[in-house]
Image (cartoon, helix red, strand yellow):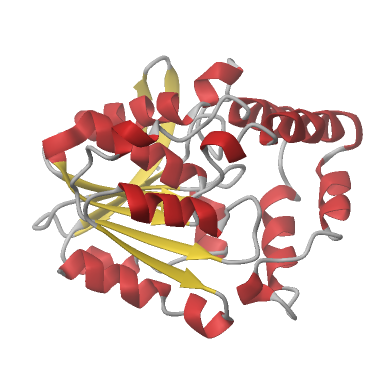
Length: 265
């Protein structure tokens, strides 16, 4: 896969699709990667490749990209600077940005910097933010210490007691996704990413209120790390936004269609 050296680290990415439309640049979630996202997709991006280029990349510290050497570089504001550096290196003037969880937080920071260069934005399971974010800091440090002392499998075992998001209730699929994401992770890289996430937060609400870009938010219920309250706050703040909340598996399975209708609109 192609690799670029940007902002002092090597970023691994892939690009596919037709160059005729506005490219989509997509970010994955914390402790995921392009490969893991392909194995356990939240939305199917492949139809978008018929009329635009789709760029997927391994965020700093993840996948095939360089390790996160400085935890402060794991903030979503810093990851947005990485994303914009990638966009500039690829020569894109106009873009659609989007992503899952951490990728959604990154996209919101990118939107504030890209401004008129941003055509649309897609936010999938936006994470905790603002006053709800503070309690996560200690959680991430504890998770980092567990990984360092006992390995990723201990984290997977502890997480079994946590109920899945509502669309996955009654199924083992969410546990399978989590095990697939964490099971083969390098403990040092994983711990570094947890500590980086402790620096992350969504942009101030007053800044988000200046974003007029058409935005699609796909949220689910029953997940305190990706609460419906974040989606509702974005609905009340962003000037041009559609919000869809999935509480059942059937509703979750509409997300890909919703995404592609939004991109085509």
